[in-house]
Length: 201
Image (cartoon, rainbow, N blue to C red; front, side):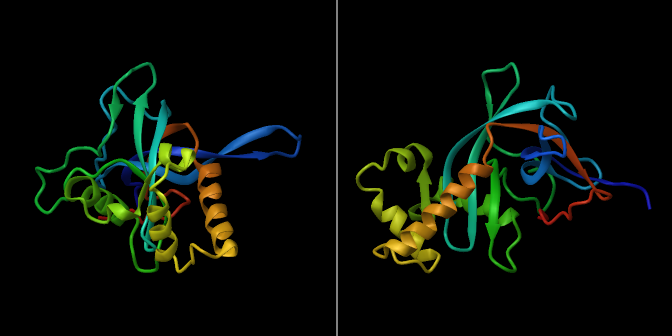
């Protein structure tokens, strides 16, 4: 069976120490899907396989079923940002142009692409905005954001007033922060890749 191109995306890296005690990096399973179109997925204009790009994380969405980071991508050497996936709106049944994102976790039975759909609804329809924490507010702990944090914790069956539960959720956010890298590499996911594709639409 011939190899089929499934989707293009910007992949993060997982650093590790090899046998010679040197710091190296492996391709992470976490990525920003750009164009999921089996057979002919596209890269952004003037982008090729193995090009590097910068990732700007804008915030974290967590409603208990979907946990994802809303991101923008800046192509190397350019000042403009990519904000949405490739335009496939001319194809019948295709979803709207979803915002670029990294899906960290979904509940059982929910496909990762659902993260993009929920972020779209949040941005365009103000739906579930109470589960979204902008990154600058998360870092600065601005007054008033306690309700958003409370909502995010309660969606994960955690009690905001419990110090133990608060520490559990803080560790969850810290883990996401450690996986989030400021740069990634453009790759094509193929049918022969060693990671199973579940970013189906």
